[in-house]
Image 1 (cartoon, rainbow, N blue to C red):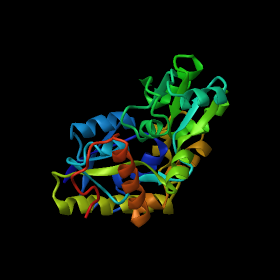
Image 2: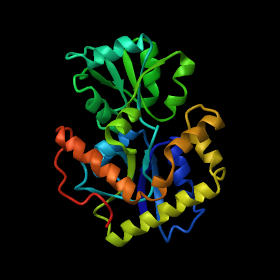
Image 3: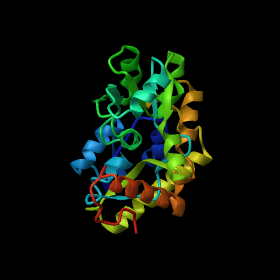
Length: 282
């Protein structure tokens, strides 16, 4: 059976999916047609129900629960992994502007439906002057003065300081202090049109792929490097360590609790619509 699969070219995703798409594990008869896209493009594809299996932001998932179900394997949750708001100017001055009743800062964001933007809205509801950019363009937009601040995700948290940029706030820290649990960033979902046994098969195979990657961390190095932004091997593996962890093997009770808390907080604030289906694979 051939299934369409979408994930980002970032090291954490290529690390997770390497064994699965290159048949380094038993895929139980499943074949995959792969699409590599940035997370906001994947979110948009999910809204249209285009793919059988896809990575998406947890924020976006809230809007497509009727189309997709969340797998237990493959998620990016964690501590100290959240999006960061950065600037070129004085971070203290910008932070006080953000906390004011009317913030006029122009902020570059990696997409409306990213979990990063969701957290920004949670922390600073008055910061509404946002410009959507591809995540890898945000640092340059800040450096060139096209935006006053940038919301960075993925490996950019390792590179912004080298470019002379400064941290205003780490929104992952903000969430951890508010919620006391890991921040759910992105998950892997399966189309509800697929038979339930196939959804479970995908989940099993994906878990095996993550476990293989942990047991053979250098196995997918060429594949990871081929798709990564220009970065050293050290930065690639730092990135992987940050986003791929026990929750990527299996969400477990703790991971599910963090996701439920994210959604209940978002519902309370009117950030997402009401969810009428069970979000987890049963």
